Image (cartoon, rainbow, N blue to C red; front, side, top):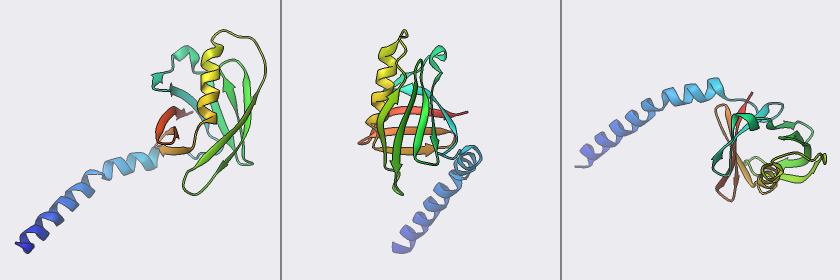
Length: 140
């Protein structure tokens, strides 16, 4: 019985590994570096960002500074990251222009400042706060 169990386990392991080969190839081909990539917001707090709001973007510069645009105002902040993909952003400074939809801009900045970890998934950057997805960005 142990030989049969071992045989089945090996077959299942090989099947699992071979089924992921396409995924790993896609990830490797489409991944972008965190730094010096312009990340455009595509989802905020579980809601898709409309095409007209795609100006919401950030770029992480190598000198631990993040710059971007909240849809109306330019933003910038210091950030720190570690080898476990923990990240801390803020405080965020922004220009003070009065624009429509400032609520979304404020929600965007709050999501950035509450981020505790990030995940890179091919051309996408996911920002999480204690395991809860806050924002999804796409590399441009």
